[in-house]
Structure formats: structure tokens, C-alpha cells
Length: 243
Image (cartoon, rainbow, N blue to C red; front, side):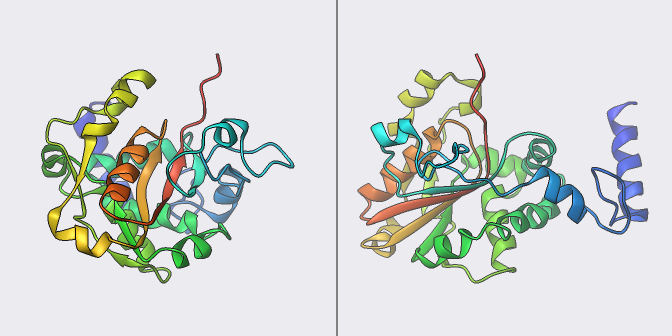
């Protein structure tokens, strides 16, 4: 089916059945019914350092014990896989900003969320490059934050505190070592935000954590600007590759 015809068909279907579950087709429980969410988004114990699932009995993975990250903790809700990868990519495409709400609702199931939010003085989104922001029309991390703020109390937001370098590369095309080489040049803190960040506990929000390079770059920039500690909240964590 040509893309344009498929797009028109999908818009017409959404208009007729806006509450159909996009996984099982059940009505009226869209965009994801409770049964599908229960089955596809279990709350798992995850390492506070890297957000990967933990083996029973552990509180932190061996890699993060050996080499702790610069952030205090990171909370991820799901693995970056079916059906969340498609939903997040659609949100990032700029065509369905309304997906921010059902994705943000996933966080509400995690009992660690209220503690994470209460422990932050400020929260802010990972920044996009000016070109990418213009292409999408919005920052998906900020859209997720706004959606969550409508559902539960949140810290004060600083949406423009982080600035991403205009020539910063798209990291998901790069290997691990190439990503790490970009850490020092990805982000700066806007001059107007430095006074607000000084001495504050900051929560950084993003849609996906892949290797942690983006979060590391943001954390180091915020700590350099005077933040006392940085934590993070993401919707999804990319599972490690199985060699």
C-alpha cells in the first residue's frame, strides 16, 4: 500500500475508532488496553545506574558497581522493543504528538516515580539541535514531560536550560566508541539557566536511553553548571546486544 494511501486510511480509521487498542484491536480501550499494557509493560527491577533489568537479588549491576555513572540514578519504564519502539518513533516523527500522554502514563505504574520526582528541584528535557526541533515542530522529551505533569505533581520545568550543538551528530548511527568521543561537545547550558541550576537537584527527561552517552553528556554539562546532582527519567531502555 503506498505510504500516502496508508496514511489517509490510518487517519480515517483513527477518526472513526479513536479508542481502539493498537495492539489487540479491542474497543474502547485505545490506544493500549489494560491487558496489553500489563503483558507488554511489566514493572521490572532495573539497575539505577544503567536502567537494564537486574538479576534477582541484585540492587545494582556489576558494571555500574565497578564504574558508577555521573548521574545519581536513572529510571526506565520499558525495554525499547515491541510495541514501544514504534510508538516512540512515531512520537519523534512529529506526526502524532498525542502519543506523549499514553507513553507518559506508563511511568505512573512504577512505584519509584513519585520518589524520583519528589527528589528533584527542577526537571528539564534533553535538547534537540535547532534543525531537528524545526523539523519535528516540538521536542518529544518536553512533550512527555508536559503529559506527565498533567497526571501527577512534578518539579519546576526548565525547558530551554540545555542547548544541543547545532553540528552535533545523530548518535544512533554511531558505534559506542564514536558516541563516547562526542560527550564533551554535545551540550552546553544556556546562560540564562545557570543561576537556576546552581545548587539544585536536577532531573533530566528523554524518550530512550541507548548507551547512556547522551545522558552522560547532559549530566556533565549540568554538573559543570553547578547542579548538585542529576537523575534521569526515560520511557525506554535499549536492551544490550546479544553477541
